[in-house]
Length: 196
Length: 205
Length: 185
Image (cartoon, rainbow over all chains, first blue to last red; front, side, top):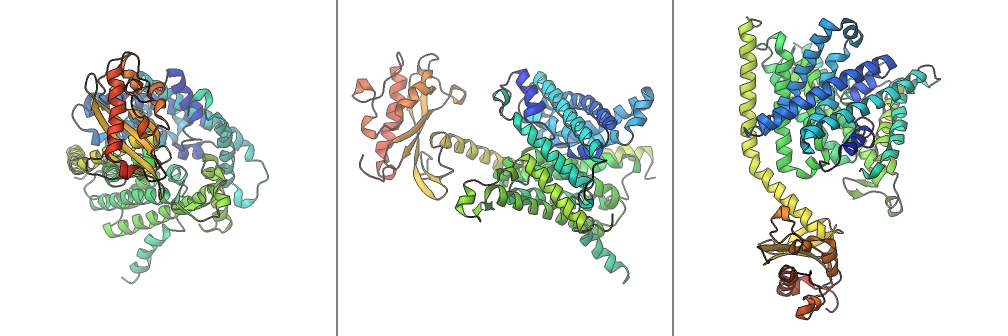
């Protein structure tokens, strides 16, 4: 993947290998937050911000510290701690300077720490042997893919609220089946522009 | 003392059905959908996560009196990521085929909501043996769902079980590929959850 | 006491140290096995490249030069690995051969893998155009045209072309009995 040009990397992350609908990474917030369009949009913005920062910090730490010192085995621990710290920092920053956004986000902010998507991106940046520029584009594409999936889905779910659904299927089951259909649609992007 | 015994067993059994992490508590979804393309993969993922869950539950419980409240989350994270890294390297060395299939989901065990959730909600407040039972119960519940999903998806989508053919050749030449692709995973877990809702396995909701 | 600022810092520090130590030990213990697995996987990829239908390989001799190729349980051919001195160094090749002794595909190591032939000349041996000539060839045809066989050498890179062809032929000759199972040559 490190041979691909920037546009392809972005498209691959955004559509073809959509992090939620094709890779299944980031599902907890996906189902938890997508009940309303507003929270979905807010969550997406937070994810974009944290994902970019996390991608940079983790990439830099990995290549300038862990690799030269032969400490690759600390990768998992370091990356997750970086994310936890970043989220903490973002929370404090929002609480101090953008109060209303902070209260709107509520519980979702600390939830980003366990968002598999952010940690997933930091790992994939290493596994795909990206340089810092490619890593940035990949993080950007992934965050946009996350936003697309969650906002699309929130729109569907808001409609599902009023639809007549049998009791066993109400709530999660019909949400999953809805996700199945959206994922099916996204499968149409496979082999887009020759990206696999 | 005779009051404690039944509740102890409950720690173990509740994790399997009543408080099944994936189908009742609705956590730990990512690996459940991504790694269940075959029964073997689902089982492998379940066992790896179980190792981490049980290990971290025991260690967190063992040091709970020493860990300050203010930094408990970072310390939990360090403990959990240690176990995850251990299972990561063990798998690379002894089960490279499984490691290749599970890919990024092995290190992602560290953010599996189940593990951090149990450390915070249970292990930090209970004794070692009880935490062990809790971890074991949730592990069995989690692995069971992974195994069931993996089995269904493999049989329907590939006609095999653990790589062995279990359907007639005409089916295997054109199986329902939908089951092994992402939409199939979403669809199946939707059905499973509807089934659970219908049979009210998790108690009246 | 548990919540004192000092203990907060110390407990974090101790946890990090124990974790780092435990992990460094696990890493050291598993590293040899992991490197071995990587090697096996790399080898498997190289073998599968010349015998695409196979999913399992069994070594036949001790120096990993000859492998039996299987698709599930069916023996479908053999893969040989050889190297002969070319222009700038050894030219490693691999060839997949079916049960009748006909070549399925060949592969020449790339310059990233250590091939030292001349770019634009000997290096062309890695290209599809040169390699696909070998498809379907049998032992008797395995010589350069100028040596009496049917392989067209790369213009200006006779030495490299000969190294590839002869490496395959000589190994095939040496292990004929293992390689050719069905029919006549």
